[in-house]
Image 1: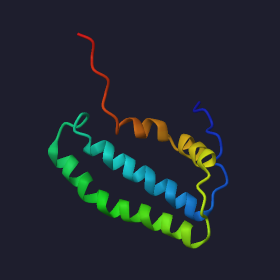
Image 2: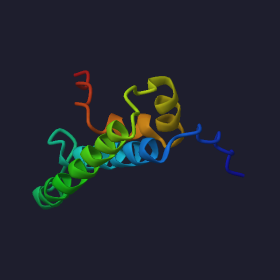
Image 3: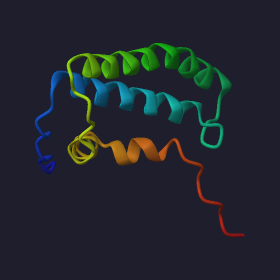
Length: 101
């Protein structure tokens, strides 16, 4: 039986779009990461898609700003990222630890 995930915290629509776009950018950066990749074609495709996802991220932040959402509620957004597996997803962006020889 799969454990039930905690519910997402209450987010504005723009905050939800920010989280979604951010995680999509992170996923693409993970595919581009030369310390974790194995093929240039997959990295190339991810780099091409990154432009559009970065624009979506910018648009989400612009929408938040235009609606008067001038503060980022980091604790709430961090909870949302954890529920959406953000820790594992962002780990792919980092450089792996060196193996002991």
